[in-house]
Image 1 (cartoon, helix red, strand yellow):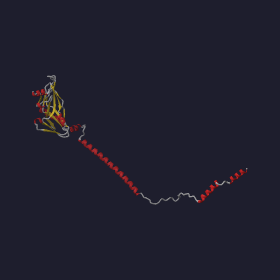
Image 2: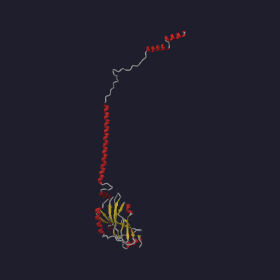
Image 3: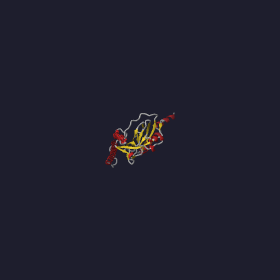
Image 4: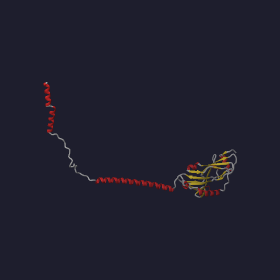
Length: 282
């Protein structure tokens, strides 16, 4: 057969022959893919097999992380590989589906999923919900097969043990356990809030103290001005200081000045008259 991506008809035929997928449903075969659904849920050490109890639901809290096995199990021939992609519906609901990727030829078993609830509210997972869509690719020839896996129950117990040891229950736990996360821990947030309000209270008290000091200074100045003695007595000049005298001309001084002016400018002096007479006689 030619190498390439398998179409729906070939996928359905292989599933009917017991290849590609076991515990599957031909109705989930798409144009060139197959949708795998939620099966086993690992939550805080508890194993819940939703594919065995269709009425059971799992509540995932805001920011919570759960591990899943798909209900369907791949059974790949040695010449067919698979590529798993998260279902768009899960992303639209606010679930971040982790660790999709390629699956080597010869692998037999469920796919492992980690789902993170990114919403601010709780969400429900239940049996039959699609979580992965898988595309099958036929190789030009057979290749080395993937190592055989054990029974599903053994896989679930071993996976649950490792999940308890290393996997955080939520995104907050992951950052808190790292010690260098982007988000602060609860204790760090409490310290930041306390420090913030303490600084504001200190600044407020300093402002009130400064304002009180200004008011006290203004009040002190007002009291000093109110207690200062005020004198209503008229101004008195010193005894040894005489008031400047105003010059008032008298009649005598006026007459004298007139006489002087008349003698100087109106009447010629005797010497001038004699000189004039002598000149005329000559």
